[in-house]
Structures are given as structure tokens and as C-alpha cells.
Length: 613
Image 1 (cartoon, rainbow, N blue to C red):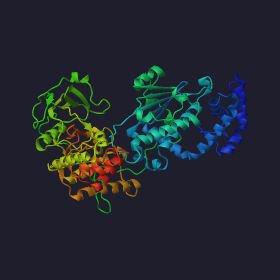
Image 2: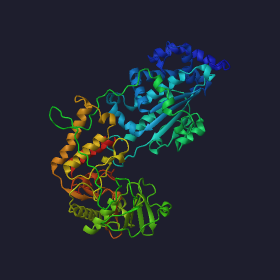
Image 3: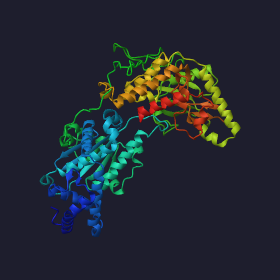
Image 4: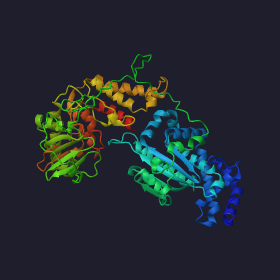
């Protein structure tokens, strides 16, 4: 029963109970929050009605009519998201993957939502049929239904009343995604759209279930465009680390969130609530690494993965584990470093590109900068050394390069100039042609330098977003260097396979499944690349306008040689077409200074889109 101390509310609940049959008839549906409103006990029906009345309590005169309309709308919406079996399967997926957890301690309820990008990326591969039919949206609805069921399942004697609410904890676990132009619908945009829809559904169809929300380690790309009502935002707290949560929710929460309670997986009640046992995915899985022979005798899954060979100038770990490791490493081709900087000084140095992710680029002097940190390799310095000694391409002057205590440092001159995107918009057509002529000459000089393997110039592995999408920690995978284009092409196929969750990669295949067919067609399309007899040439690998400067004397300067190496001759064109163009004409401009390979580019763009989207 409603609180008898509030006769208005009691009258409203009684009145709405009388109207409930007509509301159900108009909506043509009776199930909401896991409860059949036409035949369940009065307690659950009253809780649902009270929640909708609370949502419209600001205007008492309109409370009943607005609550009735809102409840009818919720039932109509719920009718559109049947069947219930889909939500049951969605709950199984949420439970097995750990994307949702529900905990209950006394009268404290918490819904845990883990936005784990790696896990979400793998859902279409593990649950192919479900994701194709229902997608992420059904998982969001199932999460809300699970929370509602938890609330309705509470013993009113334990809670001491009807004010049944839960806290919601949303934790983001991000993957590193490469930048580039949008190929299909970007992964994060799809996830963001589902989050936005789920927040809207929570506000409209599940009123009063959430008391406060705690968002841990948020990402602006998800939250800055979400359409969330101010009433919900006022009850949202943003935390920078999981351990901060205990100061808000108490010491009984799991230890991974700063508490002293049981681990989250051990206190989760969601699996017990599921009406069906949690089963492993039943969709056909991909075979093991051993070759699979089909009736057509084509070796679909077989691929060659070349491991990185230590370059002669690099010092690798002692296989015996004995002996101290040297703290300073340098390139024999470049020679010992002439400048060694104090790492502690660099920590407080002014950054040249403070918004740049990954490697740091800081001022070492008035005309000298240093690049160091994440992703910086001696291969970049060796590429700069090669360009300076074999071509007349204008680049920053290499001053020193070394690895100190595992961190690579490249010291170079600072180049004054105007970014191509700004210069282009203000100069004449003749000056534009001068830029293209210089770029064409630069690319031609680079392509005169032939390679006898594919990889970093110092025989280090291939570096590109295609090779950074492996399941789990991408840096645990290595691709190349490759002795031939055939091996390199199989390396791309291997990278496609490595994107798959282990369950897919190591299971037994179903040759009649849609998944097997699609993978087969994709791999065979990639293998067409090696039939085109490409040469291996020195390649910059990142010729976008941000890496092209024009000096005051109109000399074009090429920056950022971090992706340079020996690549198939089509790679420069693919990479120049990779980043989002600063203007539409860029795509037609590229072929005026880089030999075009449109077929190869289309294949690689598809590969990248499949790995990352």
C-alpha cells in the first residue's frame, strides 16, 4: 500500500490502480519491469505506479493524468522491444561479459555498468546472430530491466519502506584507437548513441530507479554530446579513479573500487536473477591456428606471422637472464648520441603540441626540440638519417638519438614554417603548383630507395593501425619484418584474425556459417594484393597536411617520420588517403604527387574499418 501518511498519494495510487486495466488495454501490453501488471500482486503494481507518480509530482493537479499517459507510453514502448527471449539472451550476454553487474547489501543496491571497449568490440564476433538482429540497443534495455527486477524483488521489511532506489556506477575502460577518416560508422559513435538512448529510456520508462550516478574515468567523446536531462546530471558525480568511489558509497563496496567488501564478481546477483543458465555462445566459432582445408582445397585460415628480428644495433634481453642490461642504446648507423638530455628537465619542459596524444614533443632549446615517450622508436631517427644522406628532401635536422632506460629520445632542429592547410588557402595557383611539384619530387626520391624487406628501416616490426587491433594488449602482437610481399600480405590476414576473441580464434569452424563465409571472402580479397607484383620502396607513411610545412622561402618541409620504413609501393598512397582530409579536394590532390593505387587503397581501407569499427 502507499504511505497512508500522504492521503493524496494514496488516493492517486488507488485511482491509477482503477485505471490500470484501461491503460493496459490502450497500450495493448501489460509487462513492464519484469512484472505483469495485469495479474501480478498488488505490491509490484503499486511500486511501478508510485514511481511514475513521483516522476510527475511537480504539478499535483496533473499528476494522475500525466503519470497515466507516461505509463501508457512506457507499455507501448515495451511492446515494441519484445520478444522477452531476446532480453533473456541479452542478460546472459551482460552476465558472461561482465558489462553489467548488480549488487545488493542490505537495503543498498548498486548497478555497475562497465564500458569496456575491447569487450564491446568483440560482441559481434562472439554473438553474431544476436548482434545482427538486436545490436547493442537490446543490451541497454536488458540492463534497465535487470535493475527494475532487482528493485521489485526487495523485501519491503528489509528496506523499511517503499523508497526503492539504486546507485549507478559507470566505469569506462578505453582502448587505444588510431586516428583516421571515418570508414563506416565509427565504433565510439555507435557506443555513444546507445548510451544516449539508454539514458533517455531510463528517464522516460524507468523513473525513480536511480538515486545517484557515479561516472569513473569518463571520456569526453562519449559524454560531451549525450542528451541527458539536468535533473539527472545534478545527481551525477564524476570520479577520476575507481578508488574514489568508496568515499561516496562506503566501505562495503568491492575492493577494486576502494572498499573492503567482496570482489565485484563474487557479490554479483545478476547471474542468479537470470531465468536461464549462462551458456557459452552457440554461434559457430573460428578454427585454431592450424590450417583448415576446405572442399575447394583453399587454405583459408593459414597465415604466416613473422616475429620481429633484433636489429644489429639494438641490444636485446639476455636469454639467460644474467648480467646487467645497458641503460643507453643508440644506432650504429647514426652513431653515439652527441646530446643527452636530463629526463627530469624534460618533465617540466614546455610542450610544442600540448593536445597531442602519445609521444611528447617539447622544447629543449630556442631552436631545438625533442620527441620522446610512447611509440617513439630509433627507426624514426634512422629514417631521418637515411633521408638526409640519400636525398635532398627538406626535413628537421637530426641532432641526436638514443634510448635511455627504455625510453627513446630524438633530438632535432625546430622547423619554422606554415602548415600546408593554412598556406594553401592564402596563396596563388602558381604557388600551389610549386608545392605539388616539390612533393612529387620528394616522393620520387624516396621511391628510388629500394628495400629488400617490409618493416621499419632498422628491421623492426611493421607499425600501422592495421597491426594494432589485436584482441587484448595490442603490443603483445608483432608483425614483421617480412622478407617478401607474400609474407606481408599474410601478415595482414593474420592481423585480421588476431582481432577476434580467443573463443572465435581457437574454436572449430562452421564452414556454412555467415561468419566463415565473410571471413573467407575478406581474406581472399586481401590475398589479391600479392598477385599485383609490387616493389618495396622507402615510404614516409604519414603524408597528411599536418606533416607538411612551407617555409618563408617556399621550401616544403616534411615532418614526423615515425611511420617511415620499407613498404609495398602502394602504401604511401593508402596512408596519404588515410586521415580525414582538411578539404574535399585533398583526395584528388594526392594522386598529383603520389602514384595512385586505388584498388589497393580500397582493400586496405576495408581492412582497417573491419578491424576498428
